[in-house]
Image (cartoon, rainbow, N blue to C red; front, side, top):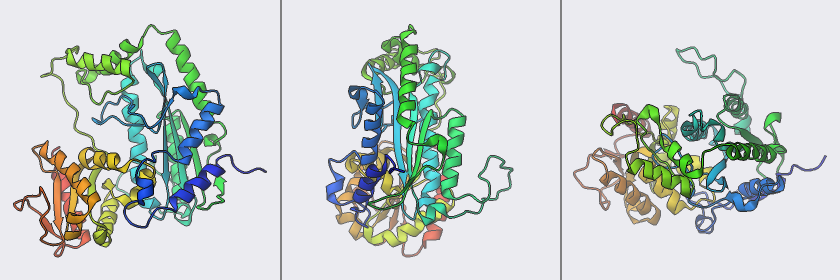
Amino acid sequence: MGSHPARDAFAEFWTQREGWSTTSRPPRSTMFGIRDNSLVDLIENELAHAGLDRSHIHRNESIALPGSYNPSPRKWDLVVLDGDVPVAAVNAKASTGPSVGKNFNNRLQEILGDAVDLGRPYESETLRALKPCLALFFALEDSDASNRILRPVRSGFANEQGFPEGMSYKDRYGAFFERLIRDGRYDVICYLTSTRSNDPSISEPKSTMGFANFAQSIVDRITKIRKLREDSPVDPAEFGRMLARRDDLGNVVLGIASAPTGLSAAEATAENGDTSLSSSEAPMPPRQYQYDVCLSFAGEQRKYVDQVASHLVERGIKTFYDDYEQAELWGKDLYEHLDSVYRLKARYCVLFASADYARKVWTSHERKSAQARAYSQSEEYILPVKFDNTDIPGLRPTTGYIDAQKIDPARLASLISEKLNTSQV
């Protein structure tokens, strides 16, 4: 039997992955100018092999699909455009390393959130059939951590839809993906596991989510959407205006950012007041964040922060902590991505202030992004935790803080949880 067609891409993936340092950031050679990775290359090549014109495939461009709940439009790893209309969106995600369990809830929430956010504008009868093919390529490291059998979580509520006993994280991901397909949240999913090696062993835990049919299924769905568009009277401009209309929410436009023609029409709809309710009558949905908290710290304080992050995850708090996001961060333009995280994607930023924090370039970048957010809103955003009395630029001495020398990580996580519970935003 021949090797798996994804073997070479995974071998390159692990080779580059092993090039990371053990610190909180990848080495400089992977931080700038490399926004692709071998797995996304593999997907693009397979789509072209299945008959898709490469000129229709867009990567590393400022193309974000329309969303309903997230005010920051989601940029996908790969978008296929037919003219000015998006017809497919593909995300490539991976979960690797010993923290696979700590990453599990965050990964599920991200994957489901992307599907719900993209699907909402297409729920009208007219647009439902034109929803882009939503595809997920997910890679899980085949390791002791991902194969360990887990005890089911018990609660006071009946949970017949929960994960059965005797499942590992690998099994749980498979069960979760099956539900997403069954419920129509995703059209196509490829789920692969790989050992960490330059000669990796590739497995397909779910036969219905194998690699062989992944690209062809996407192309078949795109072909169907194109045919429906040809038979539809909706042109790109009207398409954009329709995406901007959300009748049950007073046609409030949140995060509309599609292809140029549709985007212009959507923006015009909002600017010209083309809504069924007046702005005073239109109810605004509560702000949704990808993370409850993001943690900004210097590497010298990692031991303390790592314990805080563990306690937060145990409490079910969605936490941005670089150690949990290594696969997600890999290959991205970190200057741009971290600015988005610390400025837009979290309810609070917990800033661990110290002399080390004040002198480092990357912590300064994170701090400035967090402060830009703090200056733009009336509610507190930055929650300082001090290891010493070093002055941090822009952080006033009158700002309330927690003394890390007097509070252990478990107690700090408890205080963060209390802060989130009392938040009204």
